[in-house]
Length: 317
Image 1 (cartoon, rainbow, N blue to C red):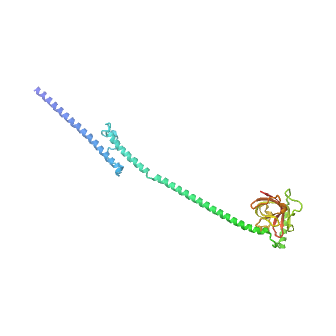
Image 2 (cartoon, one colour):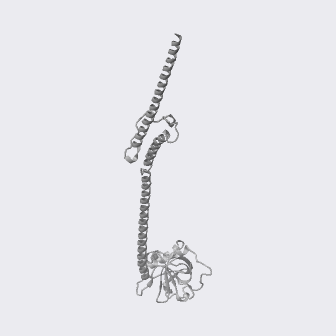
Image 3 (cartoon, rainbow, N blue to C red):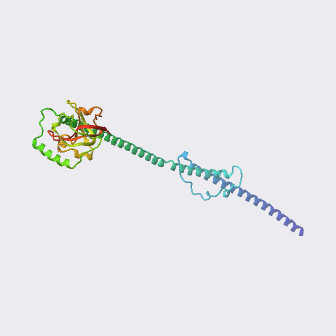
């Protein structure tokens, strides 16, 4: 009886061992198949995502929300294996995602918006510059035209004025003198003017007969025996009798030397005459010269205007 019990116990243990080994084998096979299935599922997901993110196939869509795809490499089955296992596959998924993001950023950066803005600014600056240059050219042209017009007008005025002055300075024979009544009025005014000014003295003045050398001395009434004046020469002419005549545009401080007849007949200029005896060694001025003159301040009675006549000193300033 004891022998049979022992035999039964041994047989039971043997059967249990066989069943345990068989069950262990089935368990190991199941785990292996489960790991391979998970790896296959992950590869399929990565492949699908790679196809969707590939810019060459024209499909740009986000990967499906697969649970577990955001796990780290160490959490994926087979990630602990070395070489070209799950790490390379996971790296491909991450690489594709990073490439997609980089491509998106590249598209946003390269969309042309900043470049277009810079181009627009450059274009606007170019347009503004061209408009400014055009405006400046227009202004310069207008200024040049205005300047030329002013010069032409001034030239025409000068020509016309010189023609009038030349007629006045010529003293054509037969020209009627101003009336005695007007001469008397001017003489009365001259007497008042003389009392308001004193005679100039010094080495630049002459003594004796200050009208010596004047061919029309009888027509001249002396206001002051010596007087100086400064101004701009406006018109000159050498007369038939040898006198050198010119008109002097007076500086403001010498405006008192002219009268109403100068303003009416000689454009407001003072008449200056250099007689032949005084011309030797003297500077004979030209139009536009600034000069300082000394001579006798007189009234030409038949004309009514004031003169420096004779003039015995001229300095070109």
